[in-house]
Length: 157
Image (cartoon, rainbow, N blue to C red; front, side):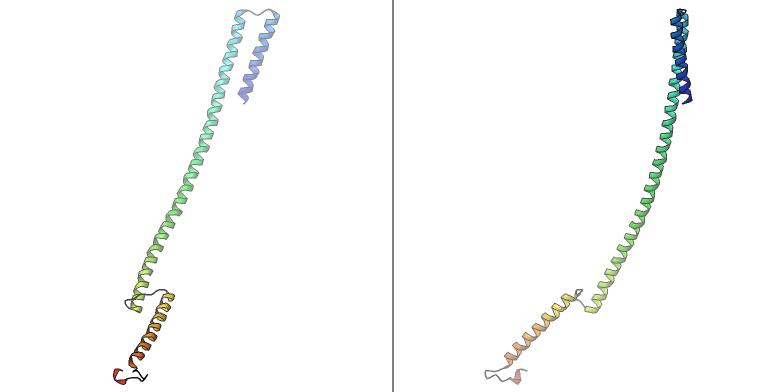
């Protein structure tokens, strides 16, 4: 910034000198060329300084962006680690669940024989149906054993 201020001051001095010389009528063509050359060299120096400042700022922005990119990469890496841990854990759970299911089927098969019942509701319904069938069957058998008078025939028993 100081370089810019110095250049601005130099321009102001050069312009004021040109105006003063012109007003005094002592200005000749050579002097005007010298002043213009000074003016343009100052302008070029100022442009170079501004370009350097811009490049420096871009470099700082670039460094800041690179740091931000590295921070995001690190964050993504940490998230991937967590995801992989959960995948591993989920795989272990699936394996354990499959083992427990297989084991429960084996236990149920040993307990119930060839038929496997897991739901208590199903077992109750099956028992109620079996009890009703037994009652109906016993009533049918009793009716079959009776003769026309209602006496039980012992020879069929």
